[in-house]
Image (cartoon, rainbow, N blue to C red; front, side):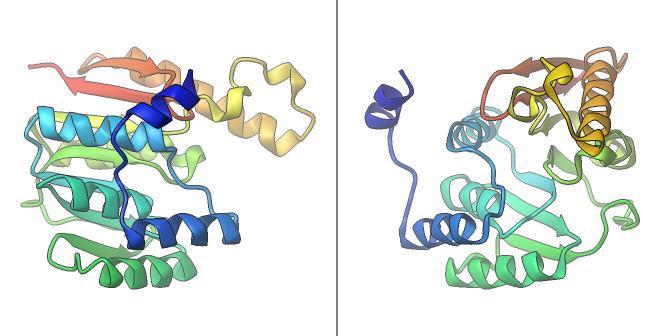
Length: 207
């Protein structure tokens, strides 16, 4: 079925995006899956989202996809300096400096201005810090703000943690499970986790 959908769905790409995909593959850099970023793009269009805060830039793929195929502007935070340099290069190659603001910082420590407000918070960084990211940045959402979090199925390991041998991976999966429980039971948000990409949650603020 995925092959059929890949064939029939419109292709969102250009030479810069293709080069980023090749770069990610060459470097072994994890990036959001194509069905997940396309879901986010459709949501941004449907909800008329104009300003996005992304936690975790990697090499710039998701922010470039959003800025290329929607009207939204993106502020994206990346703590790894090598990833930051590659993302900056890719943003410049895509000629999207006016739509994407890239910040080199640890999102656990970085503080936005109180005036910075967003329609969408997209979390795709260190999985062990997901709850901290959620709590730190959700105050910067507008009244009808949306939070999307990626990688919540972690290659299927959250469903079968008994199959994990690595102690560190077990601890990480436990933290992802804790976050999943946290968001679906959060009193201020209506959340659903979808089997899109590697597990994508959509949290809508209750008003």
